[in-house]
Amino acid sequence: MAFKFNWTTFDKSFIEEAQNKLTDALNKGIKTQMIGNIKVKELNMETKAPELEVMKIGDLSEEKFKGVFKIANQGDAFLVIQTIVQINPLVIPKQSISLSIGNGAVAANQSLPIPIKLRISNLKLSGIAVLGFSNKGVTFCFKNDPLENINV
Image 1 (cartoon, rainbow, N blue to C red):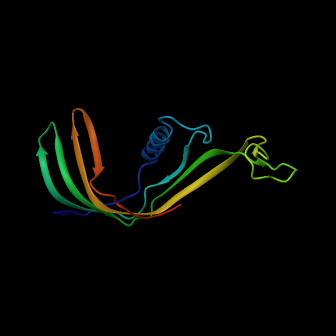
Image 2: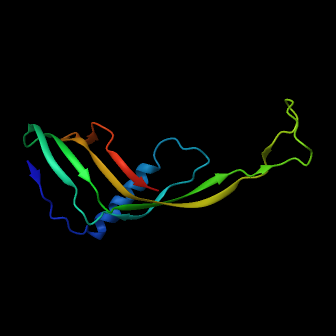
Image 3: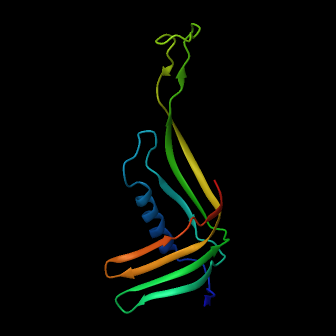
């Protein structure tokens, strides 16, 4: 069984909420001091609908659902994230560096924070996904590595 989506533009409030949730998710967990907070600056949900084929429906009731789907996406979505990355310029000693241990050490003079914007686009996915939901929450995962292409 296959579905054809009526893929229209997404509501501005939905996009803003998705950006905020992505920003929160990207900043969770333990982070290194080399990378600042990550902010989702732009989120475009594309104009082409993904192809979705129902492979199996497991549990189906008012309380829960589990399905296996084949998903292919050749869309034009993109994501722009912004952060600050700290690099450490090296101090090159004026004397020649010898290969003996302990002499001629190279070290950071001072940190140098650099703002970075990354645009992630041309995301092509193809894989088998499992979608489940119950009163405990929603689970979505791929059974394989779905990534075929990405531009950064």
